[in-house]
Image 1 (spheres, rainbow, N blue to C red):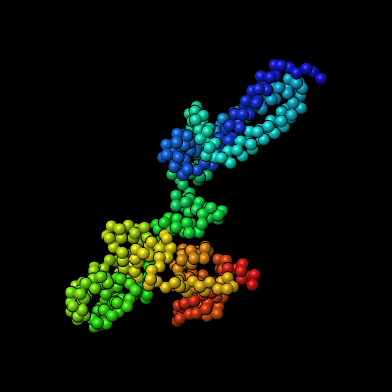
Image 2: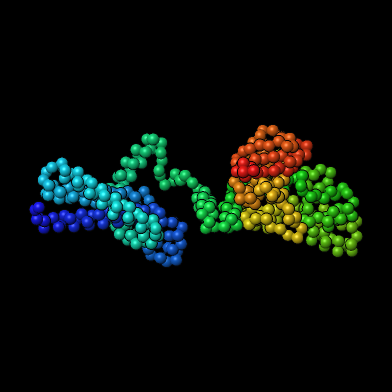
Length: 431
């Protein structure tokens, strides 16, 4: 066996150094792509210099990845070339040297320059990213001209296939990303159901319209001014609501809104004589909004106008329902029950794991109560979903299965489904 040639120490040391650089590039790639923009932004606002450097780098991820891949490929090619030259000097210019160099360098790069640094980086992405950020800023700066040319070539080539990777071509909105993140954290058990519902409710105000949460006109309690004053006052005092619409002859012809405090003040001024109360004089002006108004728009309007109550109309001006500030807030925080609210909200759990649900319960409320994911794009209420899916008005006793649930019609009043039994398919099979 021939003696070791000391002149090989320098190339072997160079290979070790290049493998170290390759590990640096691989770990940096994983850390800087896995780090959270939100956490880095919070750290930067707290004055953390490392987070500021990371945010500077990840602001243009395409340029960052291009620089990392360029540097990584350069050091890997150099390391493989040096290994090949060393083995050729040992074994001579034979094919076996190339084979051994390929096998040895593949193992070394895979273990020490890819898997190990990436595993370390994914375990602590934020700390790793802030550690490598100062060096990576210089790497990105040095390779900037080359990566810019590469970016132009890549974008031009992909554009020929109709793929646009420009900065403005985001696939998901910020709200979609936040909803996905909070759902994932809830699934992993790091966020409880109440916190998830609260955050999702706030995020979805722009996606919901007032027609989806309004109280339907058939459920609105109104005061008919064609009746005697005593009867109108008696109805108002028995009501659980403080604001009641006033009308004459036609319920679509709302002439104002009666507030309980205004009624009390008018009775006091009239010494309790109901006949002397002028309802039209004390009525507040009606506030109408179109049914297509989003909840965020309506919430902003309530705040600006200092209103708590709005009547919802369709495109023809016909009364559709009413929406209150409390209705919108309940979409965020859940049901707000006071001393007049009924504890029964139309969703009744059964012993067999099913739910008995009133037909007018909204799908959104049912999903929140049962932690289900029934779709609410095509229908607002449970009855509406069944009619949409079946394309008919089903009879009592009929059963349908869709979206992973079994729906049995329990009650129907004329053409309105009033009660449904809903059972998850898995539980129905188990029975």
